Length: 262
Image (cartoon, rainbow, N blue to C red; front, side, top):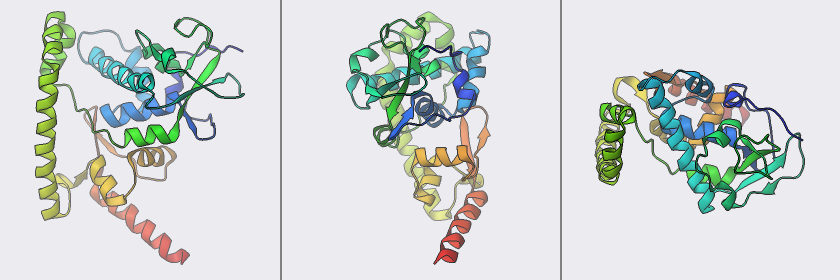
């Protein structure tokens, strides 16, 4: 059985497909892009429908492609197990890591499916939907730190191949400096939070919310999607924050609910 899937359309339709102990590739990739780049899954169709502009549109697509390559690396290494299930339902079978040896994994992320016989051909009509081991993915995702926004130099590098080449050569050095900076900023923030009891300007990051609620990142993301946790506020395009008073009210409501059930 084959099915026509419009690239990126599944991200705007909501998740309704289930498999025991597994989540669809569309679901987990949506979580990864949200946690690392701040793009909500429903934004992906718009991002890839936008015209090329050697600017913000291309930069957004570049960020999503980077996360696709990052996740695919985990599949190739066997860190996260993937499965193929026939369109319409049936037995799910593990996908060999070698079937993720792709020059460009983005088309597979766009549909969340593949043609199991012609697996390397992105144009082949999909015969199987892709699922991911839920526990392995959640364990991996919770250890990641946000990769951060692109700066002006990054945007210029996307538009200029020469700058992009220079950026590639310096990638390891920049990554190390960024990690050190993140540690310094986080340590400074932790000290401020401990002294004041809240984040600057009354806004909480994902890290703050996880610390206050004792919930994991993927759990919070799922609860936001199903409406059982407050939706965050987006500042700009990628910076996601929760108003502290809203989270405090949610926590108080949970405490009251627990007490009433005793």
